[in-house]
Amino acid sequence: MSKDALEFIDIRKIMEMLPHRYPFLLVDRVEEVVPGESIRAYKNVTVNEPFFQGHFPGLPVMPGVLIVEALAQAGGLVVLSTGEIDTNDKVFLFTGINKLKFRRPVVPGDKLVLEVNEVRRKMNIWKMTCVATVDGEVAAQGEVAAAIVDKEAL
Image 1 (cartoon, rainbow, N blue to C red):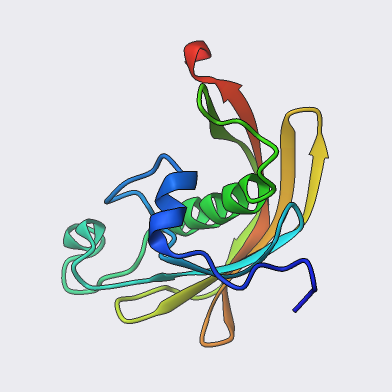
Image 2 (spheres, helix red, strand yellow; image 1 turned 180 degrees about the vertical axis):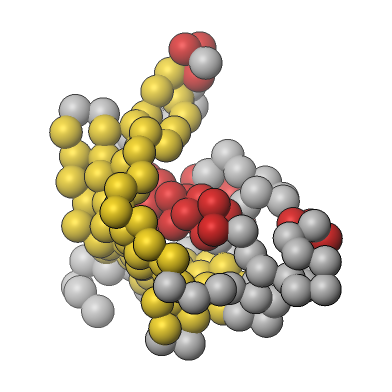
């Protein structure tokens, strides 16, 4: 662990940092974060997630788009962990997904580990390299981009 790393961020602090709430808050805990650089977080995937009712009955599989959303939320946390951004009248929004590949399904009982690295910023846009794993196997990997915008602009 880097000397600049924070050891963990619990769900209460995550909820202070992100505007998401159940059922769309997809990060349960941050294990390690180097503010503005990298993060390792996780989502405990449980059978009572509302999306499993329809995706798919009798064969529950976490939708890939929600795996990407979990990675983006982890990316938002690494950017916001610097404490340099005032989010009172702003919101972090997706601007792009690149080179994203799904490698294995994520199912109830899995611990989805979310890692975001190589955070690059140009003006108000951040690009991040992401990987989601389960038991050391890659579930999804690629790049996401996000921008911070004024809430009034929405």
